[in-house]
Structure formats: structure tokens, C-alpha cells
Image (cartoon, rainbow, N blue to C red; front, side):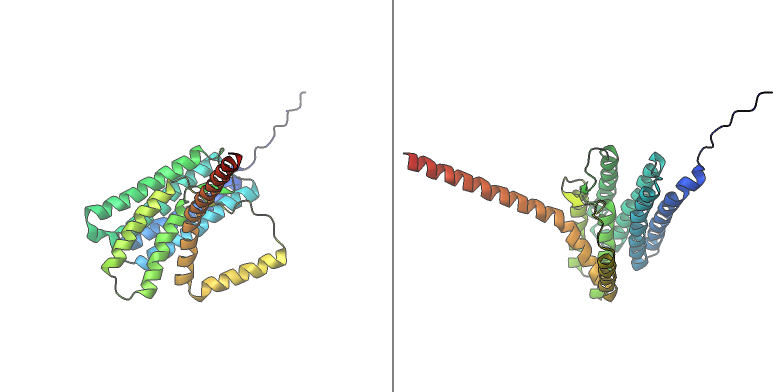
Length: 261
């Protein structure tokens, strides 16, 4: 009598992929809650929900890489979640908070933000194999969304009355963020950081959270402003440095030609 051949058991897909996709779902839920809060006029709640969504979005990718559970499904699900949490949610928050008084210019700015977020995600997915892992080409949409959210918290903490100047500044800020997301500026991704000394890393982490916890409305705003401006400033520095080197080279060439004559 022939003995039945043993078949290899396939890995339990439900347990392999459940954790990172569950974290992505938490990010999606936070984005949807932000939309509901914006519609109800609770802009501070909407802003906090976007920041929470950004935290979950950071965790899902890291958890997937640490556990070896990255998948094409997870990448696509993450992109769809990002379009809601970091595209539609911050655009609606910005529109209902400061852009609505501008009429057509306001909702066009909000639509442009959603459109550039979708384009940013599509470009990221199509160039994921070509782009170095230590940089992002263009401003990451979670950082852009967090910039809008931290602006709401910052202005609510600093300004007691919403002014017309604030609305104009935020209108230009939305256009600027939309441009940066589809630009070719290189932003640090923090994915490939050398393993630091454990004790020093713990001390640095504690100090970092203490600084943020002192006045989170201010520190978070300054943190995201610094990150967003880092790439354009670095690009401007490289252009200036290249121009100076080129001028110096031309000057040396002229001196050489004059001495030769």
C-alpha cells in the first residue's frame, strides 16, 4: 500500500500579513476620523488625527520590514490609505479651516494638493526600485500633511483670532507643499541609519520626546518646517557652491591665459 506523500504546509498568510496591514488600517481610520472632524468644525481634533495617522504610517513599513512580511498587497493598500489620510484629509482640513473664504482659488488649491499627493504616490510606486532607499524624491506626503496639521495646532496656540494674513499665508503654503511633493528635491528617508550606541540612542530619544512634550504645538511645527525646508536649502547651497567653483575655475583659466601671453 502506497503511503500518501506529505505536502508542504504553506505559511499562514493571515498571521504573516495581519500586523502591518492592521497598522495601515489604523492609519486609514485616523485619516477618516480627521475628515469627519473637519466637517464638524473640530479642526484641532482633525489635525491631531492626521499626525497620529503619520505615526501609524511610519510604523507599518518598519514592522513589515522587520518581520519580513512586505508584500505587493501591503504596498498598494498603504498607498490607497495614504491618499485618504495624507491627501484628502489635510486638503479638506485646510479648505474648511482657511481656504474657503478664497472661493474658487481655495478649492482649487485643495484639489491641487490632493492631485499632487496622488501623483507623488504613483511616482513613488513606479520608481521604488530605482530610487535610493536613503532618500525620497519629492516631499513625502505624510510630512506635507503633518505640516498642515501642525500649522493648525501652532496657530491655535499662538493666535487667538484668525486673521486674513494667516489665510493668505496658508494658501501659498498649500501651493508650496503641492509643488514640493512632485518636485525632484531629495529628502532624507531615515530608513538606512547606522545602528547607534544603545545607551546614547535611549538618552537621545528621551531628550527628543521631552523637547516635543514641552510645547508640542510649537516644537512639532518647527520640526516639520525644518524638514520641509531642508531639501530646497540644500539644493540652493549646492547650486551656489557649484557656481562659485565654476567662477573660480574660469578666473584661474583667465589668469593662466594672461600669464601665458
